[in-house]
Image (cartoon, rainbow over all chains, first blue to last red; front, top):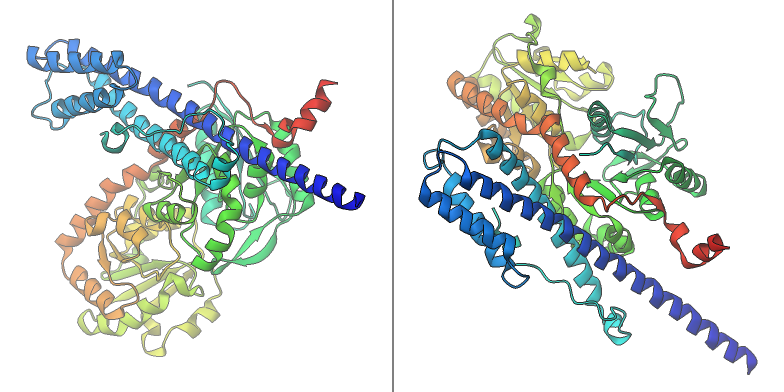
Length: 168
Length: 390
């Protein structure tokens, strides 16, 4: 009898250890989602301020300047709900203005354009890393053991922003 | 960007020639030139003075068959403890693991390390069955890696299939300046000379497809000559070549980096008849940088490297008549050859280390979390933390 109880207790401990290992795997993934978003967010903020600088540089016509300024401010001020649309709008305005040589206003400092270009590349890298973290977390959380034992606790399900699909 | 302390892990024997080793070596040299501090952990066969000062040996590699070739790898308790020692002594800001899905050092380092980790996946798929069997085993490791890099779209698709994970595509780097100002070598530059570089005894390099095409090409181009370079014994090589074309084929053996540049500059066309197993095709990038016109088989990696045919001619893999056809057409059309070479040269710039290195650095930058360093995973376990609090 005593052996049986011991065996069951041992199995329970083992199972508990397994659950805690699973939970800490998920916790690490949630942490990665947060840090990758922090990096991405910083880059996007930087992009908005470069867009603003472009908007305010000499030689840019009033209409272009207005479009860029509005989009950049929107992206900077947006709350979490509006953020995605604001970033899409900023991408579109930047693309509109910079897509081909003819429509690019001549007065823009080339250093500014270069830093925008390298920033854009970094943003797409940042998006890939962020999306990857989200997919991994969601993939792990989709396993039924996470639901049954509530291993995710109160952590919200990581979500993707729609701007991430079609940015730039 | 602040100066980083980076630990790079190479899974394959450092002193055996291979694409991954060359990639790591050149990346390290580029990073050091940029002022970062780098240490490379690799299996090393012979410890002599010629080895770079930044290489740390993890012991002697053993040979195992893998992905259609022999891989020199290392694992086991001794290697594992060397990895742990290296990580805890290194105080790295970041670990860069190469091929962590191969049973070797990178895999061990991925398990042992805790903190910012970047991984580069080089190879294309091995068999689906094997992949399914080991796929889920590696899931926890794949999760721990902060950012993944694939060297080509092909490698990225493999990664997606196997681990449902997304990767940033950054191509392999080459040093394009190596090919600047290099002249031709007269004896290699006869008219209608085509070239091939690779192991002749490795079937997936596709030399047999080229040899089969030669009689057909000779019918149209009587003065055709073929230069072949690569490791191997020339006596073994002539056995592979049918007698009727033997006098047209010259076997150069292994050539130096300088000779390789001269080789590309001298020949009229570079042929890449590979039949599979390629995930990037660094040799094509180099041929392009040397302004050589290219005919390559339609492997996915080659197709994307050559922009679907814009910067090099593409033929159906393993089809020797298609290859013959493409070669004849190009040898007869110098203008077209020139256009391809020019497009290739322009394309090759995106593979230069200055571009590729910056891209890798920006992945590093995005993987860092504040000032957290790489620790040993075991130090963060509950009971070990308790113990260290005593």
